Image (cartoon, rainbow, N blue to C red; front, side):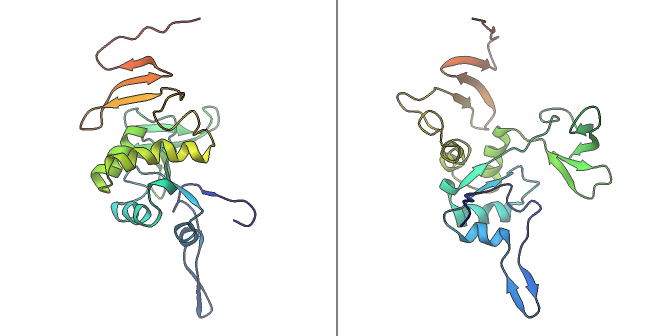
Length: 195
């Protein structure tokens, strides 16, 4: 933090935790991220990268204003499960998507996420039992603040870009507006207009 760090990417993914050196225990990146109020954390809330208990711990410790929900999705997001390529199609690594997450072929580690943003909201609300409004904030306003674009993104207010996602009670997307224009509707065919 003394060198300007303000964001912890993918909390719990490949980072240090409590370690013991001789008789003493030292906090790692995970504990520092949870302890230091000025650090914002990203979490891959797909229900696989972090289980319910860790999602709840992060939310209880940091709160919606210091959590960014991120998909970390690879090209297989939204596609059927099975083998796919992580990275370049020319020389990327073959991985398998199963159980809603990408894994190395030997299944020894995750190889990436395949979740979509609506799944993040569903996971936080249904699995972690976070209030819907708080889960939405973690996907909209908090990331906008981190990117310093909260003057035009992240909430609905006069003068801001009207990027709106409408979903039902099951958090299934029914309509998307981009800058106030219909981009997707489950019930309507949308024609792309070119200028």
